[in-house]
Length: 117
Image (cartoon, rainbow, N blue to C red; front, side, top):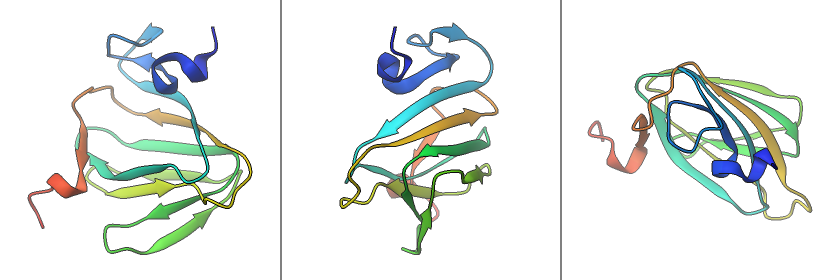
């Protein structure tokens, strides 16, 4: 089984599609050039993202963009909001290892749904 194609790369967690059930989440994610993960946060978990290959752009809710390169490790705390996109000009996918400290399938909160606006 190609784990990057399994449940969008999420292989460990407390959800139906997980290859292994656990109280944390682990994903091997791959994003294509131009792909966007919209600004969102997590109320119940901390997310760690390690860029294995490729570059990305971290986007804050106020529009600040920060270039992130392969080898970077990000920590996104509870209730911290961010988005992530892959430069359109990049010739290859960006691959990441993502670990969340708790697995709650309903924990993703889109910034557009945020009541604090």
